[in-house]
Image (tube, rainbow, N blue to C red; front, side):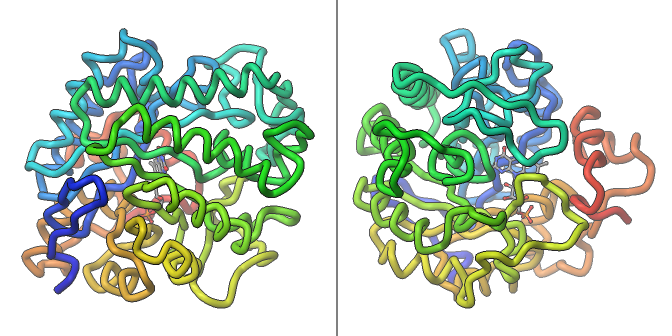
Length: 378
Ligand SMILES: Cc1cc2nc3c(=O)[nH]c(=O)nc-3n(C[C@H](O)[C@H](O)[C@H](O)COP(=O)(O)O)c2cc1C
């Protein structure tokens, strides 16, 4: 079965199988952006199953772009924490990939203070969102530099590569979105100009990593919101990204079968807008454009081996698994040994039991339970 076969990326690094742990923010890091012991344990226990790779929770590249209490890759003070994280992620020999992000207009005021900055002075759709200040062009160039510096730090810390978080409405996504980016300078205005920030970040990261480390990019394949970017727009972006010799492009969906991307409001149990829902799977469409120049990673609702195979049949080369491994730390071991019937299908009712039996940091438990419909309960 292809899911258990190795895959070699452009840079030469090989994953032993087609399963990766998806990036999973724990909201539980220390206040200074260093990884807390319980979040290292969360990762170590799951990675020990033998995933081809583990992608870290998103690490902030700039202090004023934090969206939650997560890890940082913003300065040398984060180096030893990143080294410990890379070790925990490699507990069974899989590759360790650091995801890096900036929050832009969905940064958290409690963490960054009054001064929220973003591509344009347009508030996000999240309830209670503040209107950010539009970044100056010097600040935009500076933010590209912060992504570059974070990639250099990841390299120093011993990671096998970096994934740029270009999805799920964070700053890189915002620059690409006509809803969030109303600029009229070289960073916005036309579709080509809206692509310039994601491409500049990808180039800077590739440059900082050199040719032998993994450079990945996570993209939301289309925006579900009215007036959002379309799948046709994302195809053009992915074509340009593939030209930059990226190792993989990760297609972020909440449900790969229903082509449902994460909405900016993050409401999981309400009706879903259908504004741009494409007829063919965005995984297939993007894989066609990428045409083997970069690997394609799929995610969203992978719960069984059969789901992973189905995503691969749609055109993906590998899959990232999120909620299934949150809920069952031994998910991959059970899939591998064909014990899928024993996979835990939801979090137990007792919150203390969740933290202790599943090695989930208590703050993360609160975070998981904070959004109705997000994580299944038993
Ligand atoms: C607790 C939690 C934290 C997440 N944190 C991140 C993150 O840091 N970066 C990211 O790109 N996606 C993040 N996601 C999205 C997942 O990586 C994944 O794309 C999504 O949950 C859909 O896949 P799944 O159905 O396998 O969970 C997070 C999801 C969950 C449940």
